[in-house]
Image 1: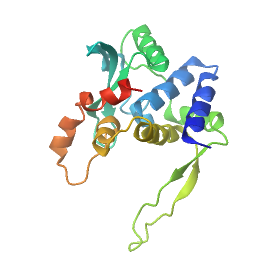
Image 2: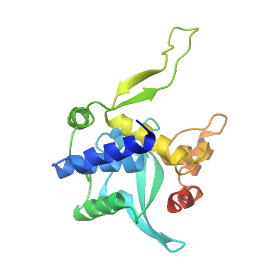
Image 3: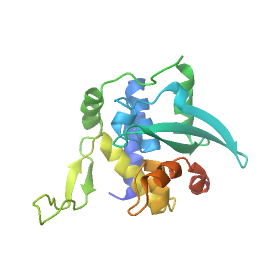
Amino acid sequence: MSLQKTIAEVKRRIDAIPRSDMRNILKFQFQTGTRLSEVVGKYAITKQDLTQTNYRGYDLALFTVHTAKKNGRPRIVALPLSDSWTKDLVTTFEDKREGKVFFKSDRSVETHASEYFKGLTYMIEDYGNKKNDTFVAEHERQGVTHFLRHLRSTQLTVENGFSETDRAIFFGWFIKGMGKRYMFELWLQWSSYVDKLLRS
C-alpha cells in the first residue's frame, strides 16, 4: 500500500472509532508524532500545554510535549489550525477545565489500537550491532500506537520535505554530534519547520 493510501486508511479508521476519548488520543498521537507516554503516560499532555498563536497570518496550535526518554524535556509541536484534526484537538483541550487531557491507561490504548489497526503493518529498519549480538534485521511489525509516530515521520519527510533537523525538533530526537544543551534549545524552535506545514 502506498504512503498516501496508508495514511488515508489510518485516518479513516481513526475517524470511525465510536469512542471520542480513544479517537482523540490517536488523532493527537498521529498529529504530534508523540510517544504514547507523552499522551497518557508519565509525561501526559495537559490543558496548560496548549497555546495558540498567529504566525505570518496563519493561526497555529502550539503543543508543549514533555519528551519521554529525555526526562520530560519540553519540545514544541506547532500545527496549523487549518487542519480539521488539529481543530478537533484544540476543542478537546479547551473543553477540559485543567490538568490531564486524556484519562486512559497506556495498556488500554494499546489494546484498542491493535484492534483498530488490525492488518496494517510497518517496516522496522535494521538496528543493533552484529558484533555484540544485538543486531535485528529489517522486519514488519503490526500497527499499534507507535506505528503512528513512524507513519507521521515518513509523511513529513516525503510530503512536506522535512529535513533531519526538522524531524529532530518535531519528534524530540537528537542529531549525532550535536550537544544536548543545543538540542534542548532547538526543540523549541518550531518556526524552523512550520512553513513546510503551511505550504501543504
